[in-house]
Amino acid sequence: MPAPPAPPIPPLRRAPGAAHRWLDRARHADPRWFQLTVLGSLVACGLTVLRFDLPVTQVVVTIGTALATQVACSRIARLPRVELKSALISSLSLCLLLRTSWLPLAALGSVIAIISKFAIRAHDKHVFNPTNLALAVLLATTDRVWISAGQWGSTAIFAAALALAGLVVVQRSARSDVTIAFLASYLALVFGRSLYLGEPMAIPLHRLQSGALVLFAFFMISDPRTTPDARWARLVFAALVAYGAWYVQFRLFRTNGLVWSLVAVSGLTPLLDRLIAGPRFEWDRAALPSPRRAALLPA
Image (tube, rainbow, N blue to C red; front, side):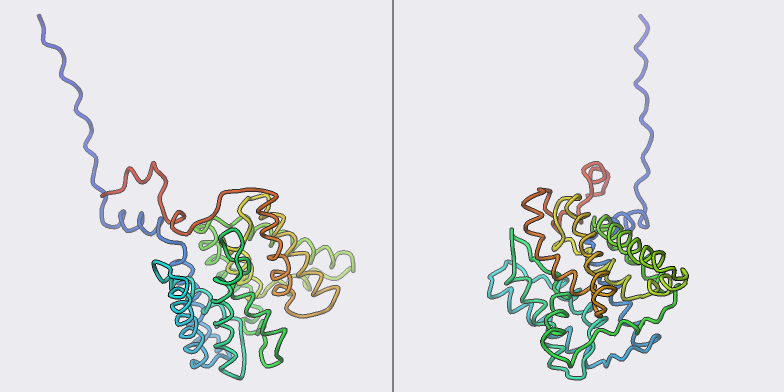
């Protein structure tokens, strides 16, 4: 009787190399590390290349106060760990946008931003983007602060590079939908107004070549902890922010329409979450690989 055929030899699987493992870990890293890298690079570029009107002392005070406030609030709330990445993101954003001639106001902005995350909450998440709320409070209460929107210039190349960097961040934090919806709505309103008034297209194009607008779209409105949980709710949220910003700038003829609109619409987030339920975003969950990819990762 002939012997049964030998089972086929399975093909050898090559162990992943060091470069592959590094890329895989980077792909599933906490999205906040990407955000910190981009924001930190922008601050460094602003200080050295673009020559922002930003003293180094203000950078030190803003970041130091934010970290100290985060530690104090975490201790008071008896949290198991102190999350410094969030405080760094808020303080770097303040360094990019907030300008003041009095350092205590820069420190106060950091305090407002960090405390708001602990004090103003609904459904176990903070309601307002910390940086945006700090800017709004200071702009409403004192004339010694301002937002330097023109510091970026109007260079389209720089705005495009900033947009690409922001796209990586929002894609990693699973909030690209709100950024795309906001930009589409805002561009439609700006271009629609120019078409209605018969303005040449160079005018709306010039208005949109702003690093401040791109920074807002990719790093503030896309905050996954302050946007609605469900995708349809986020699309409504983004459209409302775009319309509010357009209305403040082109109907009320006021500056800082993006800031005021985001503060106002953020107050509707708990209502949108209640009306349209969706999965809650968690940073730790965003950093995890999918089950299929996790099975392929080395132990």
